[in-house]
Image (cartoon, rainbow over all chains, first blue to last red; front, side, top):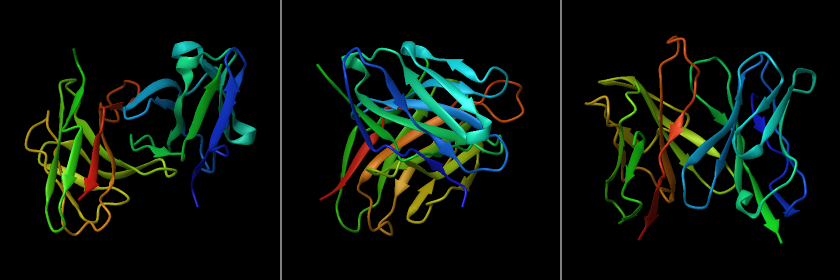
Length: 113
Length: 116
């Protein structure tokens, strides 16, 4: 079955440490790829997106993501996390460019002082 | 400010009652979407609309209904047929495919629905 997988349900990281969130998809073609962030009780904010071209994309808040076709992955990274990065992160794909998104189950990030 | 407004922020439903969640956007987007969010399950598409007076079922449309009488508005009704309505509901909008611009969905702040 076609799916989006975020293997880590919850990650705890120290402030100032690096962060990597994993995302894998199981679609045949290369979809459009997105990372969104959600603060508690809020809507989703787009962090970054990949449509084509350079496989390393930069986003807002110091985040970046790398698309690896061979691994069907689109992992999100940040070199040094801030306490304000504590939130839930969702990977999403648009398989057919029909603007309907399929979401992973999300990864909750806790930042400790 | 352009954006998507969802109301109310919190909503309570009694058994057997229909309730309607509001979603308004002033981004001039043609497409609008409703998602349901449950803990540990990500977001699932309920309904979407690409033009006024037309809409399509998503993955979990049973027990829900929508209307699209105006471009700016896409209300969602949770009917009494939805036996497990407690969830966080998110509305989103985007441009249409083929308009030559990047596909990005913009989200509202959500409505949390609980059953009394």
